Length: 192
Length: 156
Image (cartoon, rainbow over all chains, first blue to last red; front, side, top):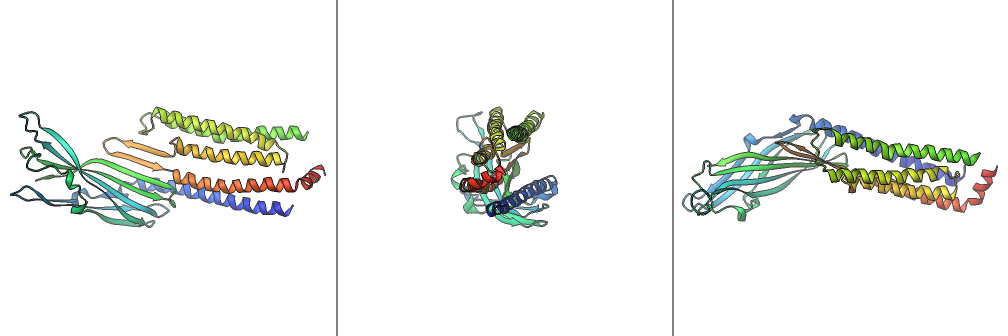
């Protein structure tokens, strides 16, 4: 065999090895994703212990402070590390708008008051990551808040309701699989 | 006799490529689209796109396989068709990406949705194909430089 063909054969073996490795990682990654997603216990969003603090000045009805925290955990039951694990939370405030046009014109509105993504890094294989998502006062979209004096119908019961969309996103199998799970319209509290 | 053998070899490999690049993906996606109640977010237009590009590039790859495998061993013709085939193979893999087949979204009623994105995996496979392109270019150069030697060996 000519020397050039021997060199070519070696490169071909290397490419074959590379292809087999990538395919093996893809298959194992797919299996891992199924293992993680098929067991609900691997994802725990603890809405019972979610805290939403809304401080409204009783005399001026101005929102002075607002923050939100949500504990959650995720178990990596697969073969690879979970990478670039992110949680995005969108909070919506549901209220009845006072239109001032007489009876029957009030309508229910939802405004987005928080849209924050927090990156929690990597979760090594076989471990459970316990995290707390925190939305500080500065993260909230204060300009979206309705005016408590002129917009919110306080006679409705309850006057304010809070809904959330959760999006968990992560990379798997050395970044070859990107997974995102979105849970929409979960009621997380009301005020007062 | 050698020519007939090469032609036969070309037809056999065309068949193999057609099965792997057209028939299997087509059956797979047809089955997925036909399952009642499977909460996939693909619309009819997305399905048509996926099917069209897979068949289009799959047929091209299969057709090129005929010319590659029916060419004499270590010939410049074979090397050129092999190079074109690898490039079209890259386009075939990329068609999974731009037709939307690499991003699967399942809608779960009263809950939300789940998305699986395999674009990065396809990019890694294309990286491997890029190495193969280098190998094919090397073949063309090698077969051109050693043309006489290859012919002598073939005659023996």
